[in-house]
Length: 407
Ligand code: ASP
Ligand code: MG
Image 1: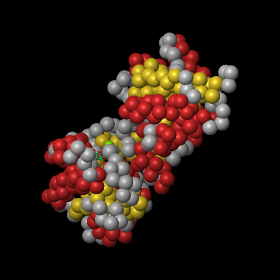
Image 2 (image 1 turned 180 degrees about the vertical axis):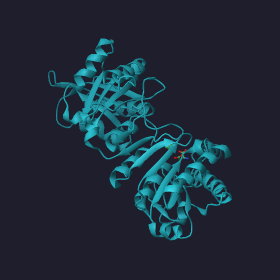
Image 3 (image 1 turned 60 degrees about the vertical axis):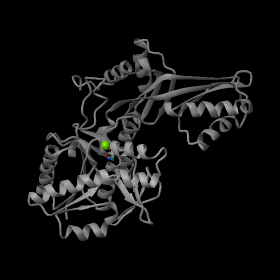
Image 4 (image 1 turned 135 degrees about the horizontal axis):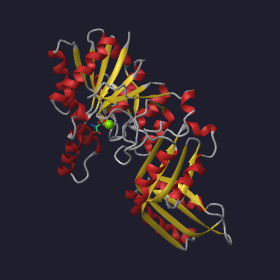
């Protein structure tokens, strides 16, 4: 049995007109597959409205009740869309997570999928051509409703595709696919035909917001090919899939950036075993995620440590650093919020040297000062002043031959 999973985002189900485009895509899916599983998001804006409602009722909404509330957005979408399918002669029914079930842990607001009962789905597919499943939601073992985190419908779709051994998972949105960088700041950005899971993980974590990051992790783990495409065009979109030789021939496949960065520097720390642990231990205990870290070489037995955190975590970070500054022996605690990071990403970097040097040279020519550098096998990240982000993205995009007129 050939099964296709199609997921549609909030703008695709926003109103009746948009849903008619979705209907067209499902009909196309049925023309080439035996069955289609449709996963829907809440209509555009609905999840935000529900979250705001919870805030009106309670200063600190109960997490489980909040999930019970916000998960209703998807329920509206699947009921309305299934009516449309039936009116067009397609045998279909809607499914909430507990009706399958899609089982999750009880981390309300950010739950993880543990299991999907595929037998129920296969049984239902004997009677229906289309099953319309509410994205974003799950159910715990003791039957409480959970949600998977903002943007979580992508993960619902990929998890269903993995559970059903379907051939491909299509993620429909209002853009044509994944771009080499943000087209809003770089007009030369191009849509990629293909991108590896590893690259997509880096692009998504760096703020290329097309796909929920956990959905890419899921797709990678279960080898589900994911196609990101538009509901409103016939463009084949971007295929997110496992790496192949042709991908390695490309040095850099995308440039990402993230403005949600703040830099903290601790001056003159004693360069002895245990200093770094004394700094980062309390941060991790309080749930602060540290991104880049640099420790300087030692001078007279002392060293500086610089690291970055998300801007919203800066007050908490500074508070923690003040409270331990005497213990760790820092002479000064400095911070800067006007920083941002830019990354060049590509699996081709594994086999080629000189990428970092090329990036630094190009930035230097434009007079952009580099504050911090970190590298991994497939990524170079630099921290710069925020006001240079757009320029840096455009320069790197051009330097690595990504501009559409060169390729
Ligand atoms: N409706 C949820 C949200 O807005 C989940 C999703 O759309 O993927 O975050
Ligand atoms: Mg989304």
